[in-house]
Image 1 (cartoon, one colour):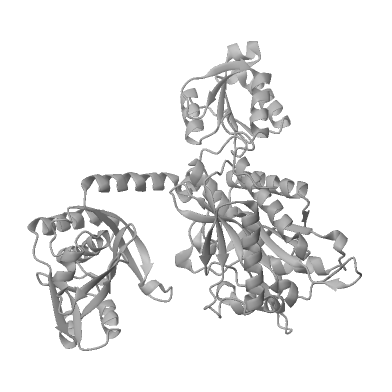
Image 2 (cartoon, rainbow, N blue to C red; image 1 turned 90 degrees about the horizontal axis):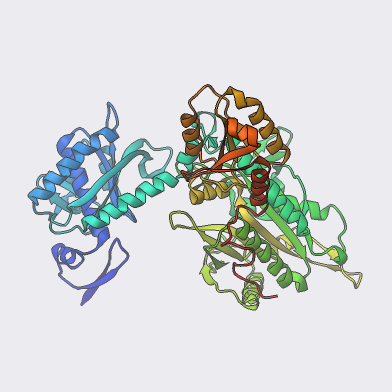
Length: 619
C-alpha cells in the first residue's frame, strides 16, 4: 500500500505506508519551495530568540521567496532590525541544529502558545487532539509542509523588506508586520535574484511616477484613486488623443455616457448577479431610485444602440468611449496605477449581423496590432478564454450560446492563421473572448487587449435591427478594448520604458538651457517656435549652474537637451544632447525642429522598426 503527497512546489510523490516525516523530507531536499519553507521556520525561530515578546502569525514559502507575519504591542518590527535578525539566522544555520518532526497534544500546544493569539486561532482550526509540527531546540511551529532535515543548505538567504499585512488577508482583521525574504541553494542564484529585484525596483512605475512627478495616491483622501500631475496628465492626454483618432479613422463613433446608472440596468445585464462583489454599494436616492457606479460600459453603449431603430445598412455599428468605471477593490489589493478603484477604459462595442462577425473580428484585431506597432509592443501571445462549464454560478447558463460563440471564436482565429492557446475558466460571464497577453518589463503575463463575442446581452436587452427582408433580427455584440485602462496601460509603459518615454510620449520633449541671461531672448523665441510646431519644450532660466541644469534634464529623462550660447545665437543653431548620451551635436535650429517633428510623427521609431514588421493577418 502506498500514499501520495503533494508538496509546496505542486509535485506529487508516492510513499510506502509507514514512511516517516524524515523520509519524506529527505526525498525532496532539492525542492526550492521546501528550502524556503525551512527559511520561514528559521526566520520565526530567530525572531523569537531575539524578541521573545513578538507574537507570530503565519509563515510560508512563495513563488519568489518566503515570509512570516509578526505583531508587537509597543511598536511593529522595522526594516532597521533585519540585519540583526539575519545575523541570528546565520548563527543558527552555522550551528546546524537538527530539525525534528514533533507532535504536541492540543493542551500542550495551547499552553506553549498561551501568549500567541494568532497561533491559537490557527490551532482552533485543526481537527483532532494531535498537533503536528517541527522543533528547533525549544522552538516549535506547526502548519508547515515538509522542511529540510538539515540547515546546511540554508546558507544563501536574504531578508528583503517589511510591509503591513492584514491577518489572514481580511481588512477587518488586525494589521500585522510581514517580513519578506528569499533563499537559494547557490550564492550565484541569490546574486542574480538581487539584480532582478533591483531592476524591478528601478522599473516600478510607482517609484518612477514619484520621481518624475507623474501621479500620486493619497490613502487619506481616497485609496486607489490616483491624482494625475501635469507630467502624467500629458502622457495620458497624448495617448487618449492618439487612440480616439485611431478609432475615428477606423469607423468608430465616440460617445460620452454617465458614470452612474439605475441599478436595474445592471440587473438586466447580469452584472449585479455575477459581478456584485466587485461593484460599489448602490446609492439610495430616497425616492425609490437606486443608483450604481458603473463597473462596465457595455450596458451604457447598449442604451446608445437602443436609442434609435437600427437598420442592417448601419451595421457594423461601432461605438467607442474612454469610459470611466469604478470597481470595489479591497485595500490590500490596490497598487499604484495597476490596481485602482476608478479607471478609464479604452472601450468599444460593435453591433454586427451574424455573417459579419468574422470580418469585424479581423478588423478589430488588425487595429490592435497596428496600435501595438506604434507603441513598439512586440512580445505578445493570443489566448482564447472559455468558460468553465462546471462553474454555473460565475457563467451565464446557456449551453447553446456558449457552444456557438466559443466555436465561432475558435473558427475566426483558425481562419486568420494565428497561433493561440486555450484557457478554460478565463471567459467573461456573458461570453468567450480573445485575450492578448503581453509580457511586462519584468517578464510577467498581463492581459492588454481583449475581443469578446456576446450573444447574451443583445438577448437580455431585446436588441434588434431591421433586415433587408424588413423583419427584425438580433445583432451580435462584440466587446473590445485596445489598450485596456489608461491607468494600467501607462503603468505598463512606464515600466517598459523605465521612465524614459519616447519623444512622442514624453511629457517634456525638449529642455532649453541658455548659457546666460544674454541668450534668454533667443531661448524664448526658440521655445515659441517649438510650441507653435506642436512640440513640448521647457525653458530652464533658473539662476543655477549650467551643469546642474543639464544633469537635472537627464535625471528627468527628457529626450532632448539643447544648450544655447553666443555661438548658437549668432549661427541660429542649437547644441543638442540626446538623453542617455554624453556627446552633443550642433545643428541649425530649424533643422532640429524638423527632425523632432518627424520623429514624433513616426512615433519615435528608429530605422530598425518600420511599419509592417509585426505579425500579419490573413486577408
